[in-house]
Image (cartoon, rainbow, N blue to C red; front, side, top):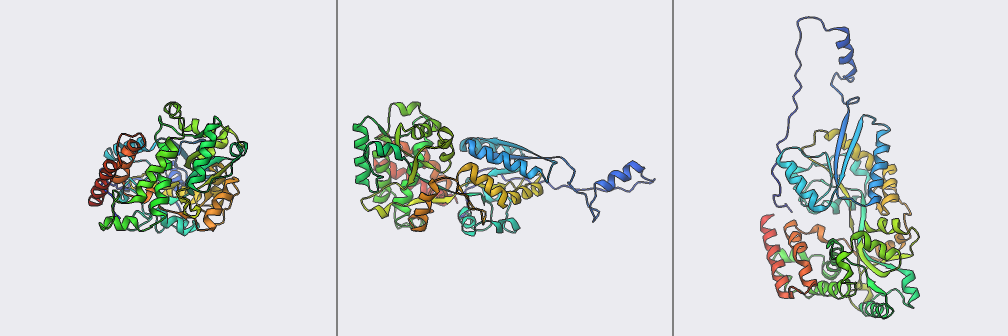
Length: 436
């Protein structure tokens, strides 16, 4: 589907090479310089020209930062003339930065993909040979939001689920809960024993938001993968769908009510990872990007990963698995050729291994199978048993998800009832559909 126009259309700069014939002979020095800046076809080459690739990244965790630095060094072995300027920032910061940069026609070279960026601002990678190095299903899923073209090159496959500390459960005589009833019992037992069941944050609302994404992916899209198409056709609505309400109710009941609500106003994303790693809580809902932060706190933390229980049928619990980190080249890049060479390197087995080992995720590069963490066994269970869904917020229109992000916490905090919340979300869906 086409996306809403979000930032001003880029004006492509055309580089014109003007050659002028002189009346006299060129000096020996000039002839030498001209020869050194030409290839076998007589065209100018960038082989020795200093190039700085500017990358704007949403990956603020230490794992991805280390992976990027290692990949830069690997690329520079064969491209010593290339330097990198990578800037890590939040989603909101990146959106704001891109709008300003587009208006001034000074786009960066590469960005970690965001669905909010229209395809006309990105380079189509469809014909690039390095795309063939990647898992075809991952490439298709990463670009599902577009009518055609390949604008996002997926680097890894991510997930959003429920992390749990095995030692905390064992110490309190608990098994891993597989149903809602079992999860409720576990939380009550932990609470009675003075243990906060869930880590959550109210100073960084992106933390509880991740759990909500996982929950509606299960309750809505896990049950009906065609829900979005039916909603566009007017056959269903959020307000009348009990599965949407179930996701919000489960989110409030567990992620919010079983957290330390007073402390949560002072707890950050990093604090939540530390709480789980150090055994101060039993559960923490988040995505694959949170694993490196947990391991940074305690490398040998005895943790597992599960899908959120959503009913008393354990097979209803499906893990949200999807292409996570993707790279895109901006259409206004002045170093597009070099940027493509870097993406080709990222799509290599060497780079795929670097990324997987540092970020603790599975690689999309064909043939790269790194045993990056014991949690990989948990993920494989859901994949091999077809207990997963690829449909999360990334296949939803930006206008809708912007509104969801803005108001989702109102229900969690008791400021909205269900009808009020659902009515606003249905309205946002209709606006997003008309604006596509």
